[in-house]
Length: 206
Image (cartoon, rainbow, N blue to C red):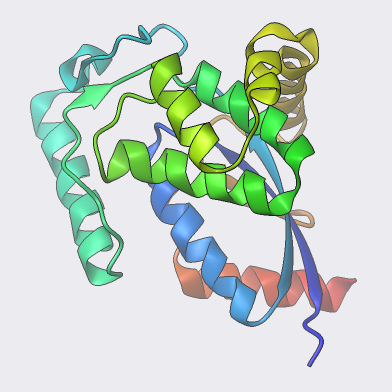
């Protein structure tokens, strides 16, 4: 059976836990749709060092942060999504540039990298701001050294991040994750049922 094609744009960052959970929920739509996802990466904490910093450096009040963690852990447990307790933040720019470059390597290699970047940070506690770690992850996905080097040296990939930022502004998107289904924009922690409702509406309108 041929599944209906569904085009979605997702604004995301690899250090955003809600992006990680949203990614897992969104992928479940593949049982009903031929998903064509335009991943638009946005750097949410450019001020953070690639060496990593304690999560407290984000400046959240302790009570607010603990409630956020509890909510994340509850969702992950309910949906059987692996999630380690977050204790550090890092700079994601090099990871985002790497993913933009990996798009040139084909869907399979891009998604292999995409999944492993999320898992490295949220499951294994790897500092994905470290270029050595990123090289190892990318290499394990079959991405060649030339592509890796180009990700961090060629202006076109920095331009893509800027284009993503401008695209987000056009849609009046101010936070990640944000999911664009046609004219409908869903932001934050989105239930799978809401994804499916938006998908159905989007396909009906086509």
